[in-house]
Length: 146
Image 1 (tube, rainbow, N blue to C red):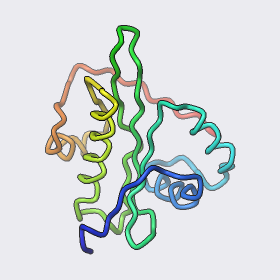
Image 2 (spheres, rainbow, N blue to C red; image 1 turned 30 degrees about the vertical axis):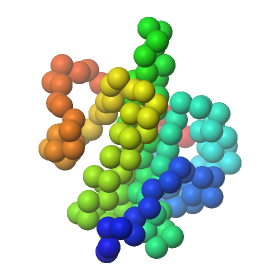
Image 3 (cartoon, rainbow, N blue to C red; image 1 turned 45 degrees about the vertical axis):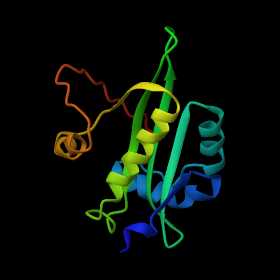
Image 4 (cartoon, rainbow, N blue to C red; image 1 turned 90 degrees about the vertical axis):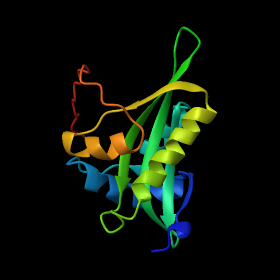
């Protein structure tokens, strides 16, 4: 795989058929019965969500998003979500490039802070990509069954 062949762009409605199977690699939530039109309309109605896809040979091989939160004090913070690279493309720096693209979006939108939550096995990956580990965070994960 030639690294230059990965192109990143804003996610589009037509990408959902490829993004959902990628997300399935990330979580145990079943996306196969989701109504793509409803999901897309909910996604685009939230103008703080900035999703991007990574394309290799016109196939979606990566997805990630940064949600921009406007603080009451006049600042913006970014939160990176749903980082996933197709299992066949892992180990080829696609994830690193995806994170860089999302950080660039956050910087372009004036975020003073960009955060993400991840599972323990991924801490080293994110630390190598400029994130600092804060051991004082408390996270509640609740997944609604749909």
